[in-house]
Length: 115
Length: 115
Image (cartoon, rainbow over the protein chains, first blue to last red):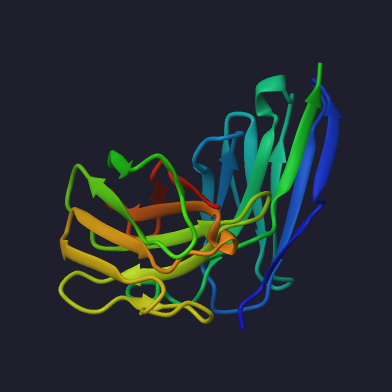
């Protein structure tokens, strides 16, 4: 079945450095890839997403890149701040959408930004 | 995005009992989903709640254990039946919202502890 692998499982960076989290997916028909940030005790919050007709998308300090051929997508956070510390989840939508709109989530990355 | 609420926010239950979790959205949405997040783990889809018809369950989840209702486009319930300690988890509903049927937003979750 559909699988999403996420690496690394933990990531520690110094404040101001960049952080990169990588995911790979198995279903070549997947065409929507969101990223969620989950702070301790809180709900997952959508921070950025990308669709398969786009190779890169940026929103201030965060960006996502997609390589459809390799079935890889990555989250890039620049100029990290302590408030970026959280668990980040990637996801891939299985199939073309509509009635089959379910997301498959990666295993999560615990990002710690050291002040 | 839609405002999503869940009740209860947390509960402690005895083995063998059942708990019904409610998910309320402030606007009509096409898709509603129920997820489970075990301690320190990723999000696993339990089922898609279909308005006016039976829910669609994922592999490993069955209706007898997790009956779901969706009487209209703004409300759904998930029941965790005949609970055991292994059912201790956070249960989250999510919805598609806004102009995009891709994007999913999560409710605040229900933290369930089974003794």
